[in-house]
Image 1 (tube, chains in turn cyan, brown):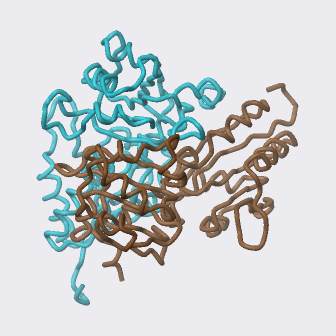
Image 2 (cartoon, rainbow over the protein chains, first blue to last red; image 1 turned 60 degrees about the vertical axis):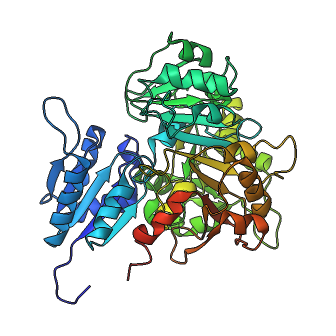
Length: 253
Length: 253
């Protein structure tokens, strides 16, 4: 960085899963000094209370009634503002590098010679189950957890997630963006070896005040008898049964 | 909760991966009002700056020269202090419900009728790779990630992680507590189908000022030519190659 030259920077910041209390200290401090905040999760709006009063706040996500920015347009915006010397916070739901496309934004910034930092956040893949009383691992029940995206057609031969192979693992499965294809995904997990009676939980609005948790068996989910609202975090595994004892959130006044 | 009766509560709180800036706002607020703080990660000591000045701070982890508390002893301590009416923060490295044994502590508290809450944290399984410039998922490279513990003997037939089956998945693998058995684990991943040239990263002291990252191939790790310091977060997958472009932390002044 040449001395005296105006040098902007981009911060790829995890916004956490929804509950504003799950934002990190570093994220809050960066919001307080940001010149620009680009955000796309509507659930992040409560976090904007911590943004610098002079910051320009730009919503770049999808909303009904108007066209979302494309990923390439967002990257170009980040680069442009940083080249102008701005401190830019790119606020992303959950964690920026776990299904957050933060890696792509980092690549675009690196290619343009823009300095950047990553601020990890609590992923909804972990936060939502925690608030639902579901530990992703538990002694004697699950020693591994796989987090996968369900946005692709699981029947495509070139699909990047091999759900039947995943069904061969004994651990917990967490599926993000999978509500639309839930029946096909669960069918493939069954074919892979997960038991029909294996419990499934669908967590909507996880960690927020209106969190909803619904449960079924893998057989019910595979048959299409059970449908989950979009978006929901789906958990497949014996750990779901621990909710009977660990659902601390529903007990709160 | 009967009116007027002194009622304690236990908070199972994620301390994050090491960088104090990755603590959540909720965790910091709870530390500030705690009567007791029980912690076991030595890396958490910087976080204790936020603890209530009157709080009793109790280290219950392993350290050289003295016996650690057993898991059952820790659970009994939490119950006892809550029954006395105290606000108890149980601070756990990373996230309490991802290899944190928070589920077990929650069960003990539920069995004793003690109210509790869970405060998720940034897991070292996500935070350390992020600070090393490794996205766990990346468009066109990895659509799933499995996080597994390597503390068991992978050659035992009853081992709860089937590493060869895990080798059959295309996604990223993150191994915690796996440095001692790294060669055997990587051998099984090879048998399962991961390519010999697949890159492996070992991240020590992840997210802290002394973070160290070392890389090798899966073949080198399986042969025992490569050894990782304990504890390290191990990442196996093509995403490790993105470090060339995304290693933002080493660029910092």
